[in-house]
Image: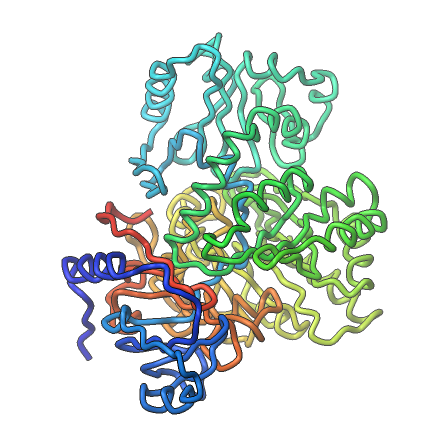
Length: 579
């Protein structure tokens, strides 16, 4: 069968039409019609009309049947603005960090690949000299001699190794902070080290700090975050950063996000900032909050951490909703090759790191498990997955729980038999398929070797084993574009264009489920969102072409979203390439 899609000009005209026709309509019952409405409900997979009242879906089917179902509503309106478009359930990103994005988005992006940001397009640069040349150019263009230079997305496999001396060569006067692509590590030049007033003696003995190189990574990052936060989280900078994050989320067609480490930096500051920027009537999405239990457990012990989380969980608004869940961390970052790998380990002989030592991880997990909390775990390597599953098996054996939805997040590299074990233990997975796109080629050359690197994000095996699977961005680890993530899962194409382990592909239906109903299930919200069904919230993402008929999900235009029955347009802009 020949696949078709809207030509770029037609898609742009459709986007423009949606934007021009949109107006803030008065509240009231209405019927939306579309070229096709994909429901994600197997009992009724496609319809032509959906009726909405009070922000919820009250009827769906063909136009005649929906009109009949809503015949008692005297003021019902027929809304035809999306008549030429395709509606899907509101897209969901179940692992995203608004505050992390707010800190990074105002920085200078010096990236291996192009990025399309809400306020600019960034051309990627690769190579040691090209990276340093970009930093020198940025430094020369800063007019304020007291302004710090914050740059994000250094990666040694694309930009060469980095040390304090390299940054000092760019400036011995201006503080420079070069943030690694993983967010889990940074390099500082000498002026930055001096300005932050760090304890050199304590830093030199820390296992995750190389003082002479100005390198702080994994738990060593904790030493610099407090003094850095005073500069990164100034009111004006935070206001701008959260505004950019909000725009990126909306442009991705997302109507629900989960902040999968709320309180990562400062719980009270984050709450105030999110109330100001993510809680107004003009915000077209809701945010579920999952607290970072690792940091609290490390500082206060798991039991006190639970008490503090329970107090914090009492907060909540219509758009900001604490979940009865916590976030723990197992091994190190995938982008840094600090995940814990099983035999044969890393081919260059280095070793991964634990963000929580196995004993500390189990002690914390035990407290939150017995308190009935859903546990979400950052885990990346197959040895990390083994450790986490061992703990889950012991918890389930001693204190059985039904439908616990213990969730493994990222799962960058796993072995085939681990998919079966995850299914047997009743766990779920939220994966970041962008690892394959960005790192599949590079990790085949360094660290993992081609066989293991080609099996990054072993998604097909998980689905075949019966593991509930969702996809996330971990924004800004990947673009906040669920359809872009779904495209990687379907195509398994690396940045260099190589198809890696095609047997691990998802089909289009599986990929769409992973950013709708399965993403809702991962955060326990499937009764409210994730599919277009009577009784659920009226969240839709409006597309310019049918995802099942498009050559690539990455090319499907997102025209608008509908949040609880209210349309929010997305202003069209010319495409400038994939991220």
